[in-house]
Image (cartoon, rainbow, N blue to C red; front, side, top):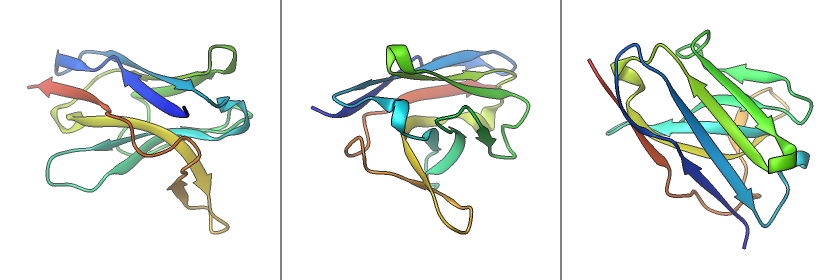
Length: 125
């Protein structure tokens, strides 16, 4: 069964840190650009960070300088290190394959099936 399982979320005070983990099964991540998305209540899901097969990274402006995405192909796992957390980072975080369009846009891929259950991150101010 192809799936991604997110973990590592929790409740943290503003300014704190969390490390999210995305474990893939049923398919190797080494051939895919991978990314972390988040969805806050009442808002659309948005791409937070992405990492290419070669290690090039993309970050949304809102998290640049605070979040770091990384991958360990040997462990079939993607990570998101989140530092200096803010209340506006509160959301459910999901990982997924990411496809880059010809216009440079980033879109979610379906190579690892539907969205997983995500992991809740709550930042208290």
